[in-house]
Each structure stands twice: as structure tokens, then as C-alpha cells.
Image (cartoon, rainbow, N blue to C red; front, side):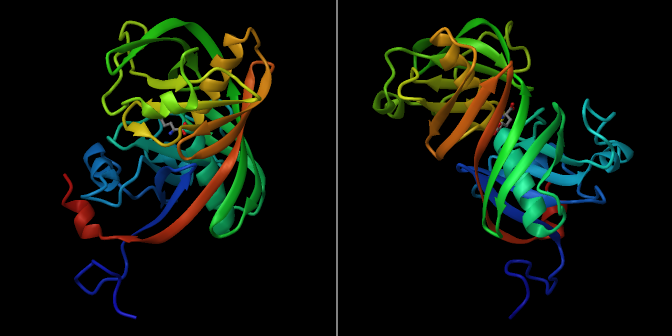
Length: 303
Ligand SMILES: N[C@@H](CCC[C@H](N)C(=O)O)C(=O)O
């Protein structure tokens, strides 16, 4: 075997990474217990770029919450997170920080167990939106199956999103991060698939001053909905875990319900969302497909 591909200078060491996805919402996972990797936005954006970098919808730094506080990445421990908890330090593909990522937590927990960093199959993953208890049902080196306790789902007021010149009415939903989930009676699986979601949806910045993730959702039928999403800080993705929770809450509300269990079908696969007593769980698959190391020299050229 020669040196690591692409390093070009004989070095095999670098910044270790794992590539994974949850229903095709894909991430570069950076194990960084010493919090030595500088995640400035320009570097994250380059790493997530599908031509310049490895390509991903986001980055998940793996460290203990206490180490992130000591390094100044976190100001304080969020509610429900102890210093010893693993913390998912999540960054969107544009380099921005988001409070929470539901698919990311599944991939993060799968990585911890599959790599041996974590021996338990039930533990808390810290996020900026608080501690998220997980149950890792399966975690072989490639395939995982994880349930995340997503915590409180807060249904806010109505608002609108404009997609390709068409106005959709939706409801604001806070799942730790902001969502506008639009259930439209005229949408079917095929008309949803045909929509052009290439451009950023229009929304009311007075209602969503920090930006918003926008979901378009078919009405609930036979225990399932179809959803597409345009994520804040990313663009259209093939899945969004917090978005599937928002979509489920909006679809139940549309039918006059506030509890239920449903399948949310997204372009990247299916997940199961259960809403009960104002909180949600999200169960779905995770895939770890590659690991390697990034050139430190490349990383340092990125601004
Ligand atoms: N893909 C994620 C959500 C990531 C954060 C989002 N783009 C935001 O800015 O709030 C998920 O699976 O929940």
C-alpha cells in the first residue's frame, strides 16, 4: 500500500474523518476529542463543497461537551447536557452553526458505538438544543438503526413560504431549530416530486429572523406523508430529521390531532416519527460508508 491517496507529500497522518448519512442527509464526521480542529466557516464550507471538498450537507464534530466548553466552542453546557456527555457540534454546509440536526444525531450515535468510542447503546447526545437521549438498536460498521428522543415540539403560528412563485401556507414549528412545515391539500407524492425546490423559498423574516427550514408535505394518508425540504444553511437536502418531526406535527395538526405515529417519506428514504405529550421520537437508519484523513496542509490553506 502506498501513502494516503491525494496527500502528495508522503504523509499518512492528517485530520481523521468518517463519511455517513441518515436517509441520504450526509455528513462529514470529525472525531476531535481534543477540540483541535478549527471549524471556521470558510473551512467547513470548503469541506462540504461537492467539488472542492469531500461534499456533505453538514459537519459533525465528535467531542465531549466539557471539552468544548473548555476550548471556548460552547459558552456553557446546554440544558440536559453534562460535561462528560458526547456532544454533536453541528455545522451546516455553508459553515453556519445550527442548534440541532435529527439525522445527524442518528449518524453521530451510530459512529460512537460502531467505532467503540461508546460501549453503551442508550446514552445522551448533547446538542445546542439540549441533551437528546438515543437508543442504538443496531450499529454494525456500516449500517445503523437509531431512535432519538427529540424533545419538545412547539407549534407556533401560521406563515407562508413561496416556492417557484407558488405560495404555500404552513405552520411554524420549533424542534430546537426553526421550521415552517406546509401541508398542502393539493400536493400528492408525484406533484411534490415535480416541484422545483432549487431556489431558496421566500419566507417572512419578521416571523423567522434567524432563517428557517421549509418543508412541503402531503396530507396524512394511511399513516404516512411525503416531504421535501429546503434547509437553512444548506439548500434542498434528501432528508432532514428535525424537518420530518415538524412535518409530522403539521400533518397531525392539519387533521385536528396532536399525537400519533407516522412514516415520513423523504427522497432519501423513510423514517418513523412518534409524537406524544408534546414531545417526539425519530427512528431511522444510518450508514457509515467511508473513513480516511484530510490533508492538514489543504485544511490550512482554506482561510
Ligand atoms: N439536517 C438536519 C437539520 C440541520 C440544521 C438545519 N439546516 C438548520 O439550520 O436548522 C436534520 O436532520 O435535522
